[in-house]
Image 1 (cartoon, rainbow, N blue to C red):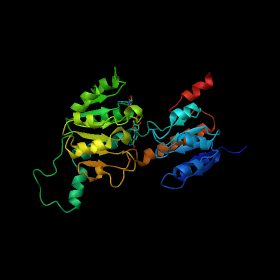
Image 2: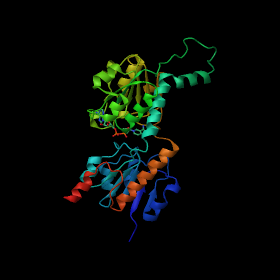
Image 3: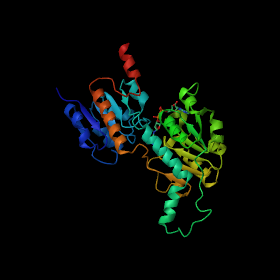
Length: 331
Ligand code: NAD
């Protein structure tokens, strides 16, 4: 019998691939840049499984192109807003993701951005590099204290909680906003307070976003929300670019409505080279690297490959975002 065919949409080091190569015919996209949409549709024709990255849009057209053999879509990320999951579910195709293993790594980076924005680390480095350090100035590059400040966390899931744990070490007061808010024993244990959106916007010195991107969270932070924040507030986004309205953010940073922003994610990605946000001093923008540690990226690849293998074998995915596809089997 022919081995199942899989398309892997990005270069993965060979050392990870032995098991998959043994079980499947592997078509590996060798480039660092994602396959263009028409190439993606061509390459997935007739495959049993697709391993995608968050840069690959997997919609009905891609599923159509793959055809009736498609048994699994394995996304190498915890977020899966690049995949039309309801369409996959309608077709009975399980979708995999890589939760958990990137929680601490992403929280570390959110906190790194928070600290860097608070103490203007990137500006300071650029200042020194530009040869502008002439003396010790009493009012030079003043930032904001992190210790004792109020941290607002929107989305109190895995990563939001991991950020809260870090904040405890800085004796921050922690507020959070999440629809799943009631009687949270972990929040009680660490003294975090569940509040409504209005309160978290008005009271946070640092506001860190950790919600998934979907219809309800698209532009969750827009002009009206920014207007409620403190003029000294810092906004940190390591969730997804679409959670923040970038035009409103640009105006808010330019006009001093809030003080600073630190983004790991933008809308679109990559951010266009001439985007107005890039003209501002009071912003840090990283190229979506919050989960980019050597160990975590390795673990993400391993989970994504395990999901892919399970899917082509007809087994339940170890990490499945639409387990409803299995419930229909039981009916
Ligand atoms: P999670 O599912 O554990 O937590 C998400 C939380 O958001 C949940 O508690 C949920 O109840 C809450 N939520 C949902 N809708 C909300 C709303 N409208 N308002 C407030 N809270 C809401 O997910 P996670 O593992 O913590 O990851 C969160 C997101 O972070 C992912 O979906 C992904 O998009 C993003 N992420 C980004 C990177 C990166 O590299 N920058 C890395 C990992 C994850």
